[in-house]
Amino acid sequence: MPSPRLAPLVDELLRRASRRGMALGLERMNAALAVLGNPEKKRPFFHVTGTNGKGSTSAMLESIAREAGFRTGLYTSPQLCRIAERIRLNGEPMADDGLADALERVLVAAPDATFFEAMTLAAFVAFDAADVEVGVIEVGIGGRLDATNVLERPLGTAITSVALDHTALLGDTHAAIARDKAGLFRRDVPVVLGPLDDEALAAALDVARDVGARPILRVARPGEAASDADGVFVVEARALPDGRARIELPDMVVETRLGLAGSHQIANAAVAAALTAVSSGPTFKALPGLLSRGLAAARWPGRLERIDKDGKAVLLDCAHNPHGAAALAEHVRSLGVSPDRVVLVFGALADKAWTGMLDMLGPLADRRVYAEPKGRAPVQASELSARFAGLLVPEGREAITRALAMAGPSDLIVVAGSIYLVGEVRGELLGVACDPVVAL
Image (cartoon, rainbow, N blue to C red; front, side, top):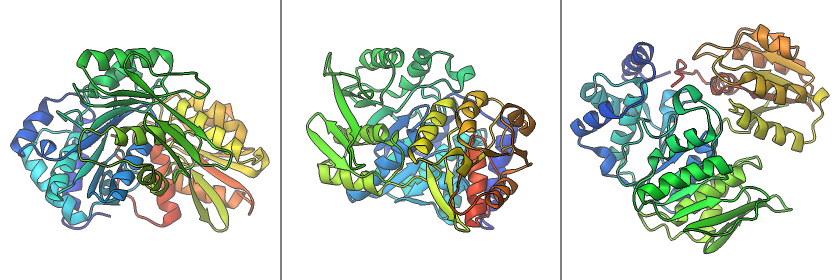
């Protein structure tokens, strides 16, 4: 739990979360940053968005920068367990006193800021105070009107993926969502695009060209015969027979065993490597060895993370939409574990496409435990069980306790469907007291 000094500041943040909720727009951010002395202009930052993969890619970018010897800052959302996880210095969550220092300044300078705006402001203040040399900022939602979109000239920007999520805010087509995310792009600043489908790719490229972003790189889709064209450079990425990833950049090749599990992480690694290689800021001297070491050292909790508990394997994954669930399902199948040896712990928020997720994950397990995540309105566990029969429990902590009791020593427990469910279960497994959930 937060320290006595930090606790009342967190309480104020939680009140703001309850009172203000989510409010897209940049007016409050720009006004508050001016009062704070514009810390966002004093440090170099990468800026990363995407429906899925933006957190993993951001973690890889930070790992590469740290491997290069830079003091690093990483801002992501939401937290799995503690609010301090959102702001990391040199790979570690901020200490309570440092976070308290930043929040005390922010809450005075920005009395009308929302929870997410206040945390974003605190990240910029904290990174400036820590003399961060390379920062990585993960977008909250979308891009164009997200509170993080205040960087005038980032080191580089990226869209890792585009899928249907947050459609009420971003649009209900891949093109509309891509255009919103491309609101990060800036003139003469590098852009790297993940393996987007044709619709999203065309929309993102239109915005990049309109604003004059350059250079532009894109990661080819698996099996796609792509080549450099119209000022867009292609990055190839694939798995090697020995399990390593091979990333072919315009002027170098990187082969490494990724620190993050899952074949989908190869594309995220390609985005991180490409963004580092074309950075418009501090000279990384992005040699293959540096990229290889940084990608291998990257860690990102709750993303195909395995935790052994009582001699049983628990696989935690924050998949919370069908695109993410498909990647998780592919990984579980790749392990060769039959459904009679899998226990699924699942819960989802009601505003997510939970039927699509459960249709992919439900058949992977003969035994299922359903819980209702905290944060926003959840899908009722009874609705989940009506689709694929399972045990109903009220919360994640009880769900993992029941799953551990069900599982045998060679079984696999898979926890997915909601970031907030994964965070609650992870806290229980590790014996960590979590802060209240904030679904922002």
